[in-house]
Length: 96
Image 1 (cartoon, rainbow, N blue to C red):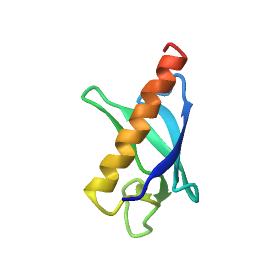
Image 2 (image 1 turned 60 degrees about the vertical axis):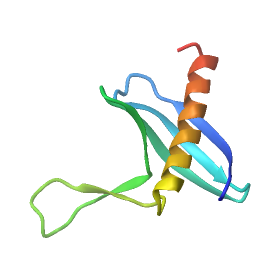
Image 3 (image 1 turned 45 degrees about the horizontal axis):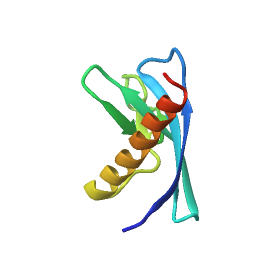
Image 4 (image 1 turned 60 degrees about the horizontal axis):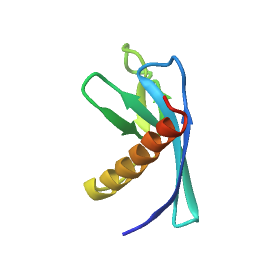
């Protein structure tokens, strides 16, 4: 299993439901930026980095498409566990 060797959290203020951004480093050699920590009334979760895509054949608003994401549920769970653990630690450090 690939190891996450670093997680950096950047807290956001007054941007509910967006609570923070995260960057994760894999094996000290590959980094992914702009993961989002989202808090809904039911849960807190990690959203993958995405970009807004407008389909010229659609009348509806643009959609967001992931630009990086895990391939299997085990990796998604590992990322979410590590990011949310560091998020909680950051909240405690700042006594939020």
